[in-house]
Image (cartoon, rainbow, N blue to C red; front, top):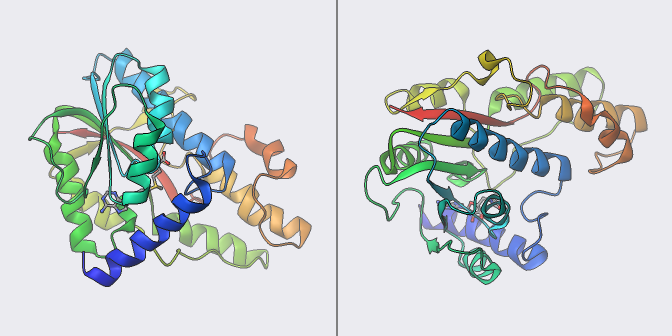
Length: 269
Ligand SMILES: C[S@@+](CC[C@H](N)C(=O)[O-])C[C@H]1O[C@@H](n2cnc3c(N)ncnc32)[C@H](O)[C@@H]1O
């Protein structure tokens, strides 16, 4: 990464490490979003196991303070698991957490220190959007593909500009201040993403399963609509996370395309 961009990222996550330590709130203040990301990953791994897909090893790329890994380790005690993380302060916290049988490598998603085809499942939770250059993001997606075995899966949670555009349109309609991309991110353009991954991955259409427990790509859409459009309009206040108002509506199924953060289940060709 060009060094000033790299410093922007390292500085941002160093601060997150300082402020949040090993907490679940690290890198995500919105508890519902964080909880749904984790529940989505857990459910999709279960789904792969149910389907008999390869699921004996998992690599969490950009594992931060290791919170997600700690949850997954409890659910899947037998699985081979590794984390990989770029920010040294996060690596230290993730190692101190001591997730059993789960080494944490210090490294970069663009040059993963693993053999071709060595993992069954890879997960990113808002990781590759921290690379502030499209060509470098392409390199990262190709690297994740390289270390997965054919038939393996990539649970890809990243942020997309189409969700942001829809969200902003709804916010403008109700006179609510628009959301913007954070300074330390470059969110994916959907067309670019689908074209870039096409040589390596097919998109698994989880909606076709007709199982409401499976998270579709727009899994956070209704939550974003309630928390980022309706709540600030009704209260005439700035967006506040974790309110009773928003939690009350968390029973809503995902509708529309109002959340930048989306979850794709991708099968390695
Ligand atoms: C949103 S956090 C991940 C949260 C984590 N899953 C957890 O349980 O807390 C994204 C992480 O990606 C890391 N990251 C940023 N650029 C990276 C890169 N080029 N390679 C690997 N990790 C990177 C950041 O340091 C950050 O810790």
